[in-house]
Every structure is written in structure tokens, then in C-alpha cells.
Length: 104
Image (tube, rainbow, N blue to C red; front, side, top):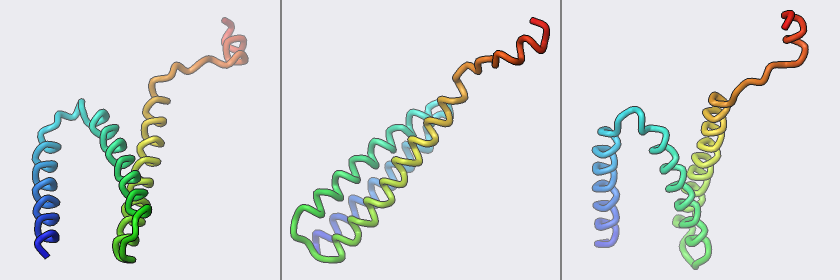
């Protein structure tokens, strides 16, 4: 039972510290911060794989499966958003038909 209290204390302490740190991040740095959260989600997926590799109870496996699903959703969503943002910075090439129609 003491292990549960220690894990809960670590969870709530990291929740509070994370909230305080992220609240002070300037808006310019939100994109790199989101990239790091995608990397952390990838580590969560690896942790879920480790849970599935050892003999544990069904509740632990269920929580690992939920964590793996949510982390995978976050990673895929992060890649989709990153791709959309990178498309904003691509140069749009003119089509061949529009130049001749404009007379240039």
C-alpha cells in the first residue's frame, strides 16, 4: 500500500511541476514544446510495451493498453499538426496555365 502512496505522490508532484513550468512558456516556444510532448508520448508507448512483456495483472495490462492508445493518438496527431504547419511555409509554385493567361 505504501507503493501506491509513493506513486500517487510522484504523479501529483509531477503534475504540479509540469503545470507550473508549461504555464511560464512564452507563446513562441509552444511548437517546440509540443514536439517534446510527442517524444514523451513515444516513450510512454515503449513503457506500455514493457508492461506487456512481463507477467502482470489484468488491470495493469488494461491501463497499459489505455496509455498506449492515448499516447499513439497523441503521436499521430502531433505528426499531422506538424505536417500542416510545414505546409504553411512551402512556396506555392505557379501553375503553367495561369502565367500565359495573365499575359506574362
